[in-house]
Image 1 (tube, protein in one colour):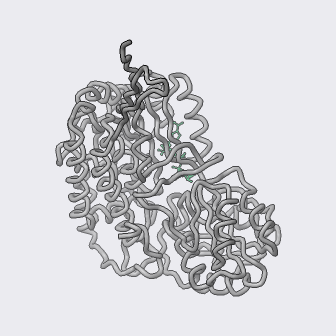
Image 2 (image 1 turned 90 degrees about the vertical axis):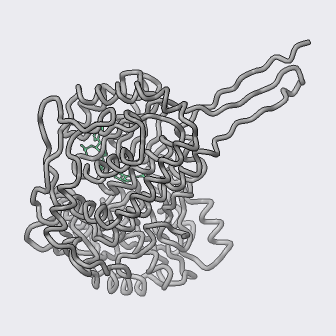
Length: 507
Ligand code: NAP
C-alpha cells in the first residue's frame, strides 16, 4: 500500500451504502462517554457534561463528561504513576499492543467510520480513509518500538568510550484538533506507546468520540492502566495549562492552529518541555506550463477537496501559469461543481458539512472579500439555507494576491486561482507566507521539479501529487507551521531522549 488510507479523491470513491438510523444510534451508544483515567471511565468531578453535535444536522448526538482542572490533574497523576513501569515494559510487548489495536481498528472500520462521520461530518468513504490512515500509524509504530537503537564508540583520543542510549522522554501531554479526529490522535499515541511514554490526551471538544472509541480499543488489547488517559473538556486552557506548568509532564505534542500553538509554547517554556508542534498551513499549489494537466487536476481535487478543505495540508493558493490557467480553471470548476454535497452518511455524498457555523461564516467572509477585490466566481459561492453547515465547492479565478484568503487558512472547499508568468515569480508568491507546511508542484520537467522543490519553503513538497500524508514518512512544517516531525523513522524520536554515558577506560 503506497498511500495508506487517504489516497482516494472524493469524486472517485463515494460508494458506501447508507447506514440506517438504528446503525447510527448503535455506534454512538457504544462509545464510552466518561473520562478515561487510570484505566477506567469516570464522570467529571463536577458532574458536568458537554454536548457533541452532528454538523450535518446541528442535532445533539450525545453528551460526554466535561473535565475540569481536578480531572486533568487526576489524569496527569495516573500517567505519572504508570510511567516507570510502562517504560520498563519490553518493547516487543508495547509493539504487540499497537499491532493488536491496529487489527481491531481495521476489524471495526465500518462502525468507527460511521462514528467519525456523525461527529465531524466528512463522507463515509473519507472517514474510512482516515481510519485506515490512523490505524497505519499503530502498525508502523508497532514495528518501530523494537528498533530503538543506540551506539557505542571509541573517543577520538582513545581514552574513553561513548555509550549512547535512547530513553522515553516521560509523561507526555497530547492535544489534537477536530479535523482528523482519529489520525491526529494515533499519530501521537503510536510513537508515545512505542517509546514507552505514558500520556494524557485532550481531544477537540467538537469531536471526542473517535478518541473515546480508540481508548476503549487500546484498553481491550491490554494497554496498561494509566498509559493513556483521555480528558475531554469545554475548558481546554483551564484544564491543560496547569498540566503543562506542573513539571511531571516532560513533553507537549500539539496539533492545531498556530495561534494556540504559540500560546502553548510560552506555557511549555516554564518547565522547558520537549515540544512538537503541528500547526496551520497555507499551501501553495503550483501548476507550470509544462505540467500534465490531468495529473494536476487529480492532484488539485485531492489537495483541495479532501476533508472538505478542512485540512492543514489543503491547497490554499493555486498559482497557475498564465498559458494554462483558463484550461485548469475550467476543468477544476467542472470537477468541483459536479461533486455531490450532503450528509456524509448518505449514499454517494462526496462533500460533507463544515464543522460548525463559525467555520462556515469564515469561508463566506473570505470568499466575499476576494470577490470584492476583483475575483470571479467560476462555480459555487452560494451556500444553501437549511440545517447543517454546508458550503458548496467553489472555484475563484483572478484572485488578487492581496485577498485575505491568500494569507489566511480557508479551511473550506474553495479553490482560489491566481496566475503567474515566470518561475521566480511563482516561487516568490509561494513562499510569501509565514507558514511552511506543504507545497504542491506540478511540472513534467525534471530539472525544474528538483530546482523548485529545493526553493520552496515548506517541510513537505507534493511533486505531481496532491497527497503527502503517509505514516511511513516524516510529516511536519517549518516557519510558523511547526516544530518536529510525526511519522516515519523520525516520528519516534520526538518521544525519546538521548543519553550519553562516558566510560573511562583506565590508564
Ligand atoms: P485549535 O483551535 O488550535 O484547537 C486545537 C486543539 O487545541 C483543540 O483540542 C482545542 O480544544 C485545543 N485548545 C484550544 N485552545 C487551547 C488552550 N488555550 N490550551 C490548550 N488547548 C487548547 O485548532 P482547530 O481549529 O481545532 O484545528 C484546526 C487547526 O489545526 C488549523 O490551523 C489546522 O491547520 C491545524 N492542523 C494542523 C495539522 C498539522 O499536522 N500541521 C493537522 C491538523 C490540523 P477545543 O476543541 O476545546 O477548542
